Image (cartoon, rainbow, N blue to C red; front, side, top):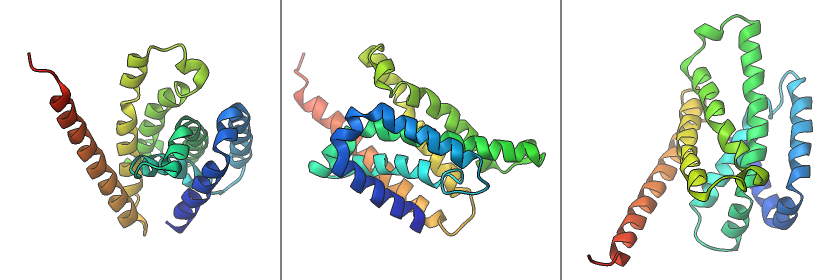
Length: 203
């Protein structure tokens, strides 16, 4: 838990300080993330191939979406696509590392439930990450893109189930975070529906 909270704080600070540069030079940041991921994949144990870094990027996006309107939220949400893509790169490294581990030790078909949930979450994540790239997003219609990215909530749910089912001392942290996020998003959706009904003209 300490590692993830520390990573979220550091990543958030970097985004706030360098938001414009991250957006402008995002392709270079993606390249750096790929290079670091490849190196991490060859190592036995790192905070990247263990999944801490990838999940911290996504948690930062989720936390930013629950913040009150202001400069910090604006900067964080302004780099939402970049954070998601970089988080995806690191998460793929984590997933591949553990799949290879499971195959090497012949327990792929006998692994715990959270292992398969992790694989499913990566599969759901891939189209979201690809379509977050501006070169791809520009080729999609707005409605189609928004419809596809509603899967992000499915992805977040799978992430939370994945980490909650891993029996460790961070379980309570993930349960609380999942609960707060779910309540906030639920209230947000209800508020939007109420506002739409208020402004909808009578027939």
